Amino acid sequence: GNDGNDGNDGTDTADAVRAALRTAPLAVDHSLLLARVDRRTGEVHAHTQVLFPAGSRLRRGETATAEITVYGGLAARAPVLLPVLAGTPGADGSGAVTLSARRTDLAAFAPRRLAFVLHGPGEVTPHEGAHAEGRGELPDIPALVGSLPRRVIHPPALDVFLTVDMSGADAGETGERLGFARDVIATLARRHGPGLRVGVVGHYDHAVHENRYGPRPVLLLRVPAGPARAALAALTGWRPARREQDTASSLEDALKEVGRLVRARPRTARAPDTQRVLLVVGRRPPGLPEQHEVVPACPLGADWRAELDALRARDVRVLARADPDTGPKGPVHHYTASAWDALGAGGSFRPGSDTADDVADTLAPPWRWDGLPCPLALATPLL
Image (tube, rainbow, N blue to C red):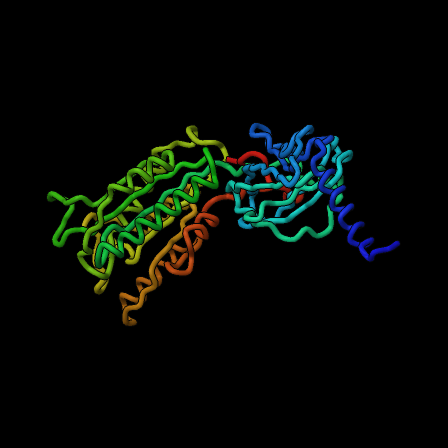
């Protein structure tokens, strides 16, 4: 007779069968579908990374975890799919069964460690601690593979120069500028790669009563264009100084020195399509070649407008990152505003609102996909 437990018996039997099936060996590889970029040609191909190889098996009640490092593409926070497949797909993406396809965001160029858990044949889930969004509909893998970009287009070589005002009201003011310059350089190094060269000029105030004939204190610190790591190492030894006056800095001399550094690397020593940019980091405008009202003259007679024109004539794009002038309106204010407008005509940034990442994005020519953006995580880093 029926004792009322038939329903429970059926459930128990199904659970027992499911538990037994989970201990069966995997008939095929269970893999994560990624994209791989050829470092030499930039061509993009589908790539499967085995998470759990065929033949793997679990004991009753056991799970297995596989960890893998994937890499972000070109966009700052790009959503990508993480399709887990049973079997190895053909070149066109056909021939494998899609088990799951979570979506997650990856930072540009950055690595991300992911973990996947095997519960049995055909059952793979992201690790509980992994950041992944809902499963959604399973994608058409052949269509996904067919939508991959043809290749990644590397940006042209880039020469970046920075000037940094080393004199401030206190060490904190100058330290912020130095820290910002270091952050910009480090961000560019992470994103641009071996085609990046960095030069830096730090400038201190002229001494009171200084002239071009007498002995002078240290006015400029310089790092010729070279590897980013050399510039970063040099900046760690730079020390701030108190500013001599509030009206103008020695930026005019720094611009002249940048011109020398630019000319020191002839066109024949650069890649044909090298782009060159200068970022001016400071608070006070440059001095004038001759005193005008209360704006002081450069003791060495440097003309910042002529130096700026000379840099632009050599195809150097000039941008500025300056503190806003909060002083009273008057001749100094008007001169300061007009000077920073001229220096920042190619792009201007403000402390507190534009981050080092924002500035680096503007300075560097972009990487580009030849085709649609890559919808998959990358198996290897772009840099």
